[in-house]
Image (tube, rainbow, N blue to C red; front, side, top):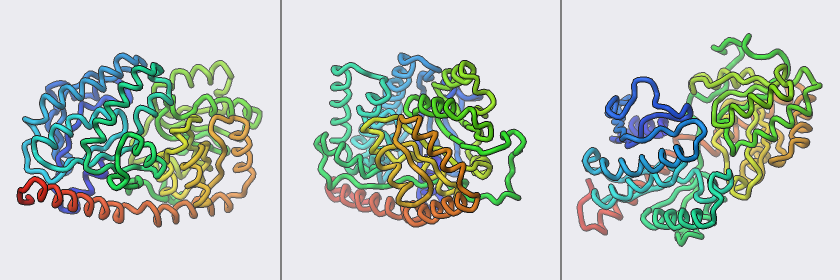
Length: 401
């Protein structure tokens, strides 16, 4: 989202961002932030407005729900008074929860502008897939809210083609849905070994299978740990995990119980700007999701990031994400939730030569440049926004700004 806002600003657009107080993934407000602290910021020319919310906490579902709802409550309450510009469009970058679009709907009505929703997580399917909500009654209620939100969107963009049919189920015409894949920030690039700016000594010596990102319920860490356990008699193979998340305590416990301290390494979170340097120290980059029909439709954002860095990919995925890796010939894939096949895939990559793995990574980079180039995608977004704004102005019988 940061890169999108900055990119639009750099292309000559005035950009305002309405968001909450940063509290992910630690579950508490970042240092220096609070209900009345840093509520207005200038982010390299992008105006950022922060509304209060309840921090998400570490592992409480109740706090997570309150976190979601509090942003909606304060957003609806405050947004009309703090977002007073003459806007051409409102754009919602929807990971989770989709409820974040509700304040945008209000602004659409008040400021008379089109609303574009960028769907990266399908609701209610995604919360059902991770087991966050199991009650059919509650899921049905969420589905009705989703239908309401979709109804008020002038255009819906999806990060995977597989999302289109799922959204149509909610009564959305296909003409209002467009595929708009994610890209990777410019920080994600091929780093020559002599220019790596991180301390390689913190890395274990040997063959490094690296996972970077959220350590959560959706990422299939049960499968990763089982595969690591199966391969623990291969001391040269190391699993390097960069990131944090709600399942990190469970992963730490499993490492201790299974005596995997010598082969599984939790290295914590690191600045996004440095991730390419860490990736350059990996022999293979791992992307994984749990086995679920909804996740089979998803192309995880780290696929693009990994490809941009020119490293070979091991995709423990079903469906769309695995298909991209296979089509690019950028690595090896195996089905989700199958630790035995994941272990086999790791051994397969381990037995390749350095040059074979390098060629995989370079093919992934070439595929990235062809299909996920930022400038091409930004131009497409600008064209959609301009067309919607002009159409909306004609419908509302007002002049374009």
